[in-house]
Length: 445
Ligand code: ASP
Ligand code: MG
Image (cartoon, rainbow, N blue to C red; front, side, top):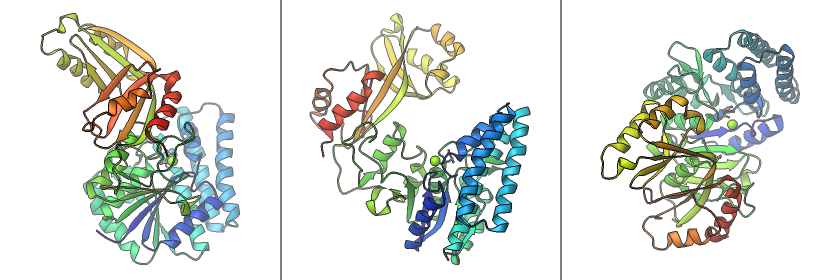
């Protein structure tokens, strides 16, 4: 393992020149940080997605381009409009306009990614200039040289062996003299066309680069001082967690905590690289360390919430003492690439929730399931996940949890498969109350 740290700065952290100055200060204070991975400035990716989706009205396109231009010009103005860079950014804006005009005629997946990737390409250019003005030598690096992916545009999968080899060849030698600034979120297919890794994918990029470099730490700088016990917008008593294990943090990301992209931790876990989450607005406030082992292993650590859940209940009267029913049902779901989240069974029925929500339940899928069983679909449900340690081994967990929920109609419970979570479904309208009650009862400060 090297001494190198990778730092990722999210969209709000690089929203404008003022925010970028804070990121620069963070990097300058930690000489071990040799690689900075950036998102596009806040709001930029949303604008680019709108342009890429083939907005037909020229006026609407012009408005979007104007908003985009203002964000970039704002940063350029703070940098006193350096000539070469200003020209370069203006060229990119013209290029985006041309691509958006093409997308309005015929939007394609490849065009989409080429447009959307420009946000990260611009933010990194601007940030290198800002660092240089501060006297910090920095070099811009096009991550597409090393982040080679398949050609599933918008959700491309990186080729890890190739990444490893290219990082050693292209990226590693640059660290000797300068800080390297590169893009999160984007990559390139084998034929060189630009791809993207999915919304919020910069965290994942940083973790993959950290893995390929054998980094000693991966820092994720965002706008909150770490991972909270639960969403502080919903529960005022929520507080930051100073350390959490990989297993617990993965459960949190999977079950809806918005702080990290769910795939982020996989590379870190593979190489046991600690991940730090902190706020670039207030680095002194500390943050959350995610690592293999933590000093404390509390029974209850956090609560996460995922809305818009669909519950399917499949009933077959003749399922009683008959084998093969579950295999048939899951066979149909697998054929349609529908992944199942929670599941409980009874003698004649099985209830499950779908990862991908109601859209995946097409008429075709319904018709196939109908042949085997009676199908009941319930919506407007929220999944609440309680995350902690040894939860399936300790007496009285159920009593503590359900005491706090005595007034609520719990639609489904999953407990026991993982030592790190207890999940249940509640009516959407009760979700905030449930979260507050559980937090008061199980996570008192
Ligand atoms: N800029 C991209 C997005 O907004 C990637 C990221 O921020 O992680 O989705
Ligand atoms: Mg982001």
